[in-house]
Every structure is written in structure tokens, then in C-alpha cells.
Amino acid sequence: MAAKANTKQKAAVKTTANIDERPVDRYFREYEEAHQDRVNKIIHYVCIPTLAFSLFGLIWAIPFPHLGFLGAYNGYFNWASFVIAIAIYFYLKLSPIISYFILFILLGFSYGIMELVTWQQTGGPVMWLLCVSAFIPSAIALLIGNSREPQFAANGLNIKSLAVAPAYLLNQLLNKLRIKN
Image (cartoon, rainbow, N blue to C red; front, side, top):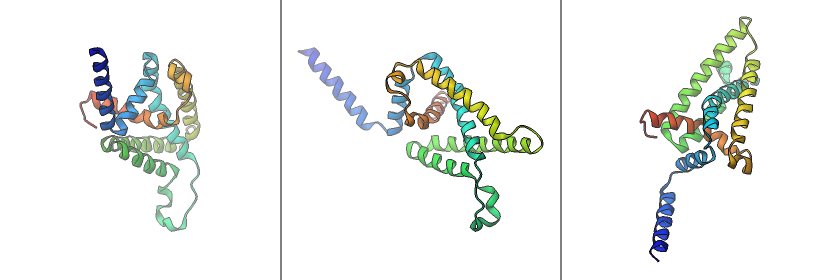
């Protein structure tokens, strides 16, 4: 009888904790539950930033139309500008601290892509081709790593986890630095 009451109390505490849980904490908890394999975690720490950078570069490379109303600012906008705005809005809704760090990371990505474009203009390799050559192995490694997870094998690819993964890794880093999100 006492064991039954204790089980009900634990269930009530767990339910209360979930009610008070922020959406970002729930996303991180679900992401962590789906990524338990040690090798998969290592793959994610390397490949998520690489995949994000290369995807950002590929979006940057999509030609942006000349819009008359932008005037002198025409060369300053591209499709990656919209990705930055959408990402910051999405992460701001989850956690302001994470969104600020993501903004600085995306600005760093922008600098890196502009350097690749400059290199391309001086006779170096094509920027989008470099991004594809980083994207493909990163995506394959992530799929291999995720295939080691039982939950991935059962449920398949989860699109939401693609957006949560960079924030989760950043949150792990912030926790190590003792910065509260």
C-alpha cells in the first residue's frame, strides 16, 4: 500500500515538473533522451557545427534578386540574411541567451563565408562547392551516428531536432561555462 502511494507521489511530482518546464528545456530533454550513444554524441559535437556552417554557405550561394527599393544596400542582402532573422526569432522564443550566442555564431559564419567568397574571387575554389564537400560527409556521419540510437531507428529523422541540435550543443557549452540560459 505504501509503495503504491509513493509511486503516485512520484508521478505527481514528475507531472508538476513538466508543467513548470519551459519549452526549451523540454526540447533539450527530448533531444538528450534521443541521443544517448557516446560515439553519436562525439559525432554530433563535430558534425552539427560543420553541417550548420556548410548549409549556411549553401543558402548564401543562392542568387538573390536585385531589388530596386534596396538602392545602395542591394549587395548587402542575400537569402542567408533571412535565415539569420528566422533563426534569431526562433531561438529568441526558446531562450534569449541562446539567441544572442547564435547571432554571434551566425555572424562568425557570415565572416567565414565572405572569406571563402573572397578566396573564390582571387582564384580559389568555388565557395558553394567547398560547402557541399563539407555538408555531405557531415550529413552522412550524423545519419550513421543517429542510426546507433534505438529511438532514431524506431522514429526516423525528426525535423524539429535539426533546429534544436545547434541550440542543444550551445546549451551544453554554456552549462560548462556556467552561463545560465
